[in-house]
Image (cartoon, rainbow, N blue to C red):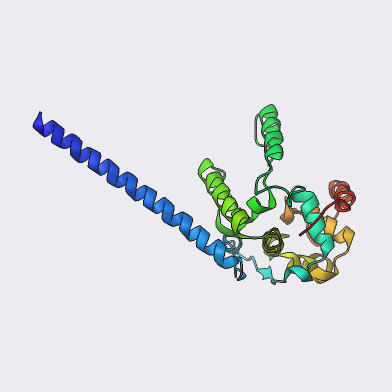
Length: 233
């Protein structure tokens, strides 16, 4: 009886030690994420997790040039907010109405056909995480989103997003995208060009150098109409 009690005590101690170690590792990981977010509130990242994964592909050449917020066309800012996150200035990282609509649509279709990621959520994934679909990754994305919204201004979040969004194979950021697709700097983009760039964001590698399809023409036109009512930081 005494031996059995002793084994139970040892097992309980091992369980508590293992659980404590996991909690400590989880806390350390969140502190690592928060330290980077706090630093990047003032300093510009040199690369992102998504960029690093892209460069692992054979033959891919990186095209990326950082430009400050004021040197990015306001048309592109409005177009991206209109296309990707119309409530960007109003929510705190999550658009709960959009999430509810996406859940209903996915349930009706029986598979994932719609998402509801905000600009902040997309930035969290691009900066730190993989594109793998899992509950663990989504939970970590949510935690990073929460930290970013409470550390960074909306202007800084949008500035980072526009500088690291993918706009083609190896093409990252507004400056590289504008030059690659239109031969212009990011500051010189007009409304139609900005709407086109916003329209291709969900599948940027499918459309090379300003290619237009009936779908893109319709999507760009919708974004152009919405741009007029968009407010940006």
